[in-house]
Length: 316
Image (cartoon, rainbow, N blue to C red; front, side, top):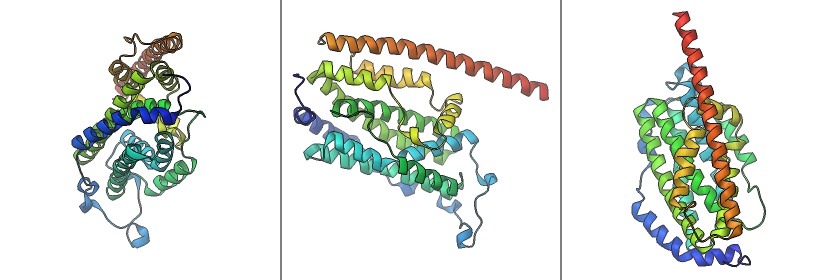
């Protein structure tokens, strides 16, 4: 593909693929209602309506489950920012606009059902949750780089959707509560279908523009950040969640990045020139470095767990 092609040119070339992928998504997508995953009988008024305000002992979730639920919900809450960014990258013309609208509508259900569940069951402090939502949405998210965006955007959302699916699934397990687990499994299923759309669209982009797309993939993988990065206390919470297996470096590498790269046949392609080869070499070196970091984190986590076990044995 000539480097003079713009995002608009790429979108035009990929439009037939997007139409096929949208049709496939609509065939597979399951309609569901957020209200069906909320135990409404557990609800009661807060003090403003004559009831009792939230107290920590009202929550049936562990600290890890509460942090994971809030982190995931705040990530979903920032949907207006994601809609703005993806519509800017994909455009709102034709099939692209249809997809952006459908994706946004499906994603919006996730925030609706999670918030209803958390407030009705008094699983978290609703005042602190609202304060965090206001702060996170006010900050929002924005593209880190200027210039042509489509290739980077479609590579990023492929990885991000899969990462979010893993986080939701593991959070459901951590909740140890069947309704929460069913709700988060339903959300994770949506995220998986979104990932498939973006992953297959990225594959089409790789065939269209292998060198440019390989550079975009390498830039995204080596600089990847979760979309919740601007949340209050995100880094501290991310460490806690990694420690307890909600989402950590090993999962990021082995369950998200490597499977997607295999699906794209990144390391088997023979249609790259010098620029694409350099990007692939950079990607390979980064994966080796990330694997080393993951092993070090796992070793540190295991040592910390062993120390905690020893301390607990001494106290018995």
